[in-house]
View 1 (tube, rainbow, N blue to C red):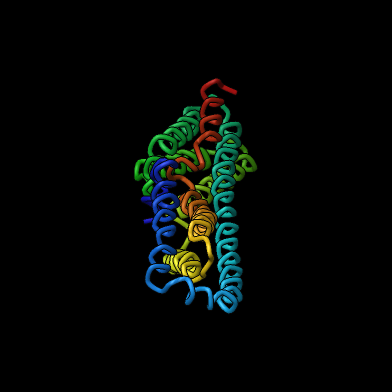
View 2: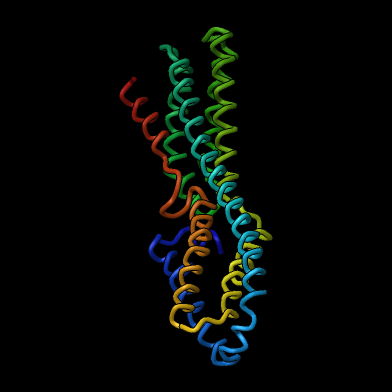
Length: 260
């Protein structure tokens, strides 16, 4: 469900996560008032207010914790892409020379980046990975191995190339892992159940002005659900309108083709 909501345009996610549930929540005080009456609800205000404060604080802490965690992992995804691009640039500059096998390493690196941009990102939108990009990375390793076996570059340069290849592999595995979502199912259950309970708690207060109570419930619902929308939007960092893009890899590939 979170992957589906993350993939939607932001306006549609807002409609489904905030607007429609808020309209339903604002009808809650009206229904409860008609069933129980103002007098019975007013008699609960003092004790209900104390309990609601406790419930609200607990849920606020939970949402804040979830937002911090997913935002940190979103940043981790951005860092992984930057590391991948940086390692690719280092390999390109180290693999310099007229020998065909050295040139083949640069060509394999160029092809890997192109497939990562064209294929991996498209697959990561659905939490998957590109087999073509996997094959291109294997080809890049094979090309670097041939250079090493034939001694076409110095030992220090060859070792550094393989170190940077390992960095590319680790960065790619990190972004593929993060693309699958970061919030476990049990936490989604807790977040949505907590949101319903927190908003529903306001139905059992009684105020003289029903319209004021409905408005307060609506405001609370918007605030609670906005937190959930933030979590949904960044839970899958390569999906939807709020995502990590390919810009670092694009710049690296453009530099390769300009011979920079």
